[in-house]
Amino acid sequence: MKNYINIKNKIAPFYKKIEVSGDKSISIRCVLLASQAIGKSKIYNLLESEDVINSLKSIKKLGIDYKKTNNYYEINGLGINGFNSSKNLKINAGNSGTLARLILGLLVNFKKEVTLLGDKSLSARDFSRVTEPLRMFGATIKSTKSKLPVKIIGSEFLRPVKYFEKLGSAQCKSAIMLASLKSPGITEIKAKKSRNHTEILFKNLKIPIKIKKTKSFDYFTIKGETNFKKFDYHIPGDISSSSFFIVLTLLSDKSELLIKNININNSRTGIIKILNKMNAKIKFKNKKIYKGELISDIYIKSVKNLKGINCPENLNSSAIDEFLVIFLVAAKAKGVSTFKNLTELNKKESPRLDIAIKFLKMIGIKVLRKNDSIKIFGKPNIKLSKVYNIKNFKKDHRVFMMSCIAALSFGGEWNIFDKDSINSSFPNFLKITKQLGARIY
Ligand code: S3P
Image (cartoon, rainbow, N blue to C red; front, side, top):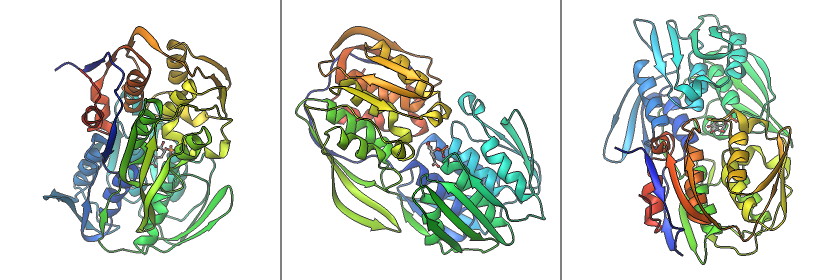
């Protein structure tokens, strides 16, 4: 089957209501935490993407059974010491940084050696951010240049740690929190702000965690070695998957969209705050709280007078996975947009800052870069007519989807390769895009 798509037409005006698949961060956390609970947890609306399927396969290798029924996954957890295997193991995290980093946290007390592998993109990413704190717990971890493959052997004699997480990485924070479950005593973490789904789940599962928040940092104390019970969870829709359609609606003519039942946790809604500062007028409707997470429908309408933004740096973390599409809005906005200190953006599935700059220049947008900050000179009348071939983006799912949105919003003829990449996070992406009326071949 061909692994590229062709787009020749901008999308026609649409007026629709859609749902997107379950949140990836929460799906992976639910699978991993259910593997540590005692009893059979039921997870509804689990995202069925490669990153999550690899999470299920990983816990299965570690001796945890699961099955899929009509509308939920049932995971039979055996408690915080329940992983078992008679031999050393290989675990393949595929493309998923979240799975790879979080599962290392759960292996700090596992007796066999586990070799953690990943695809080409994941194998180029840094693991020192998790191996460093996890070694402090007492686990033995080997790797070359802090890259995959990482080999870990857990310890029977763990000690709790005091750690300052300085990067604002939720994956690093969460890996430490998961390791703290296995360790005796109290683990103390000071963490730069990042998405907070793990701590919300810990609270919900009655894992003894204390949280103190200041403007820039969160402080946690977690009492380890406490088992917790099975749970049921309905995963809300993913704002990162929604972001492609939010931006498509904004950049299209005379269109309106309602996206149902999305997680709008404050640590994830940077994109909404940024786009509203650019004149977007995106609204939340039917807000409700579910197990400590804020859920809502999102209403978006096309906007003619988008304006540039001087993006406040404190929104970077809560918009980190959405910058590629935010840059498309900046490309069409009136005036210059400035985004500062995007160091972490180059550490994702691909070096997204480098790729975005190349992409914007390719479609005729002026971009100035100074270190990890950029200025984008918007063109409100942007209209493309050339042929664009998008390849060699390290199969980064978000680069593929962003390119589709650019094609459907700005015109021109596009061949976008590595279609399979969407399976990491959002296998239904093209189906939903077509439901909105896009012609994609
Ligand atoms: C994630 C955290 C973020 C994000 C990633 C998912 C998570 O990465 O970019 O897509 O689920 O914890 P960092 O924690 O590295 O910032």
